[in-house]
Image 1 (tube, one colour):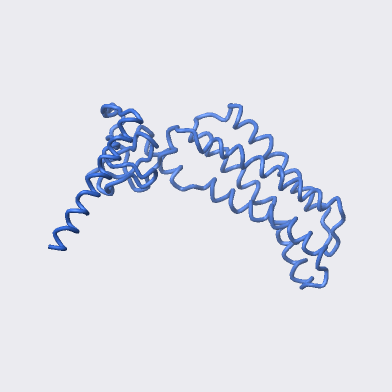
Image 2 (cartoon, helix red, strand yellow):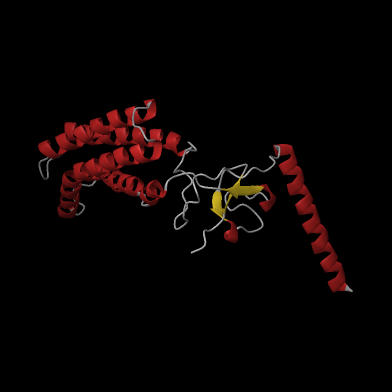
Length: 234
């Protein structure tokens, strides 16, 4: 099977198959002239693992429960007569399942860090580990003190504490999204090219040159449309 050639947008870093490249970059909208050949330097094993997106999926699962529990408790405080049986059942289900989803998120995050960055001993990753331990501890305490149909003020504080800690974890994750490292530009279904090959060199363009080319292309397109309109009128 022939390997797909990859190209990368120099201004924004978007990577895609050359055969799927249109007139503009799908991410930033600049013309295709700004693309350059790209060769993946990550091992195929790491690519396959990162392409599974286990950690992002696990995070979204736990985020559902961390926001749902305090919301339902406050809702029950405000509207105690609105479907109390259903509300109590959903809260109980969420409280007991929440710690399990957090443990899954923590384990998948640990594996993702080792595969993506080849270490977890960095300031940001260590902060994520500490916050993960805190939110798991809060979730376990919630499950231990939980009593169906009774939601004292300290139980609400525990759930809000879990939510606040999860928000901090999300903010740290946001910083890591912006890091361009091996594995962050993964293309599913694309085989890794020979690791011994050097990246293809191509001349870089300044932002001014990119802007000039965009303006020229837009002007040429406008002239072509105007000429077509004139011909149709005649």
